Length: 249
Image (cartoon, rainbow, N blue to C red):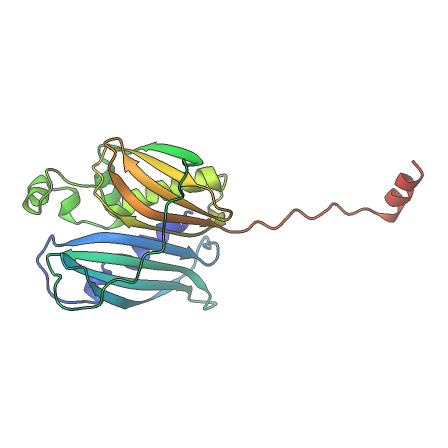
């Protein structure tokens, strides 16, 4: 199971369970997402979820609300996964709150070490609604038009999950247990059917990435994907008899 599958479990309805004020419907968009996989997910079991608001920032054109959710194994108390997300509430800035902390992500000044091209389906957003996210912004053309989009857009988390799967396939040989952490900012919307190109810069265990559409629009920015360090292979044991034979060979 991909660790990113836990994000809807931890975050669906989080804004309702931990309210942070009134705003008009359609003003809220998903702005950023991060996940830390503390250990491989068990095949079965129960998870306890705790969540909190970590900050509300004034972006002038809107408010950025950052939240964190932690999932732990009910039986053992071990942390399984931590997710961090940012909601941008359009039109609700200028309230005098703090500015966001300085950004530290910088793309290397060189060509990407590799690129990954991924196509999305025309019905991708409708399929993703099975995760429980029924926001009409992703399915209703009239609602999308009312909030400024010419057609329904793809869920940010769907784009995030598609890119996470491809990064895991290429960088971890498809072994999802090697994903340690991943973060990215949703800079522009993706439309169902878009082709995504992810540029990757290798930097030891952590790689940086940026995803664009065929139109050249950056849709995932400031991306970082960290792989768990794989222990070096242990040397094969050499038995006394074998060592002796080698000495006399």
